[in-house]
Image (cartoon, rainbow, N blue to C red):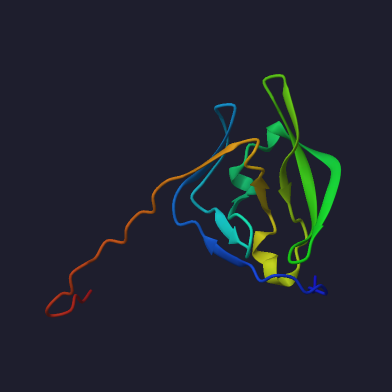
Length: 135
């Protein structure tokens, strides 16, 4: 889908570490493939691949919103342990081109869940071989 609306520029990068979502102490998402979306003037938002989310506890609801950079957002209700929380998560099923990488991902409202991100794994420096290693 082409982006027909001019909005703020966003940056989307790999989290580079394990990220989890807890709802009332229960794990709802766990991924080492999460993406971080940074928008000027807003908080960073972690997006989880749907394959790494316990979607059994989510139900799509009737709420939708529109973002100038992402397009139409679909919202979800969490149902877990007799608790029902409306608009606890959202996704962009068909985001605009600039945000296309978050298609198939879901984000969670921080007021309803705890998002935990491990410290990034440092890159291990490998010493150069002299002479260079050859198979």
